[in-house]
Image (cartoon, rainbow, N blue to C red):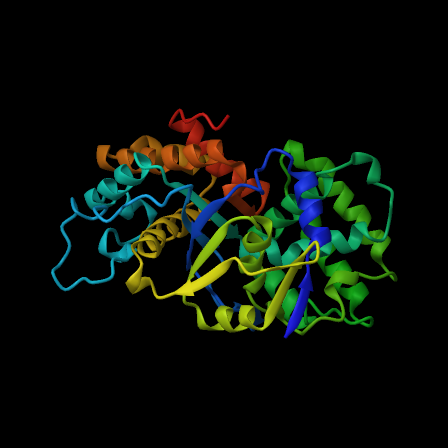
Length: 376
């Protein structure tokens, strides 16, 4: 059995997020969507589409478990449905799903209940490239005076560069075995990446950051990119188990109930998670057929997964135009989702955890602004 002592990580997370209630006694239910298992490069791109985020999350509550046995009573389902899933309420892309009256009935029930939304969201492309920035910053202390958050600013710009130039980026990564750049290939990788960055046309707010990226690349010539070397050729994400561990030790006084995911269950059964000398054993795995909370969590994360693709594949300008063109049913569902999102953030900002670029996170906030939903 492996031992994972996360005491320092846990304490650091609490110090950096003083507004989050990590010590409360909550009950979390989980399902997942867009579970890619692994992300790796192959000739021509990735092994899976990168436009949808991996989402792990669902519903949670504090205190006594609410009785939600009637959550589907107002929804017409086929008689042979004994396990309700997102596909039974809505299908298609995000905009298609917003047309569903069944989804509206479900969301109305949840919004009016003592339940909250929680999730962890992972942008696959963003997660795959941020180590480049961390590696370059590791080579110099020149920009430390910019303080906390400057690395995110740079990562966001690099993300936008890579997203706009995804074919040349993935070709470069594949040819030079990223994220395992050899010492011999280091300078070639840096020079080719610099060429792609040089051709990028930045917005006004990104100009300074883009110039910093260019300087950092030059400084890294004949040095190292420590976090994208001595890894495995082409393997960008080797597993998603860390995203299951994180809420377990972050909310150590809470209980966590996951849907059966054999690979993750096996990993966690062979893992001893320790915080401040105490073994964390506050989680279970169960069959979603036997638990209405897990079924409801499937619906929640299914919708958020669709939303992530909508956000990742549309610009801010396009989102504004699309929202203005939605029909009444679509607006009802969008507002219900946003009401649940805002309600949950106000209860505990820690319920929402995103490993994502500021570019995409701001689009989510834009939806709230467009519909008059006040986050704070």
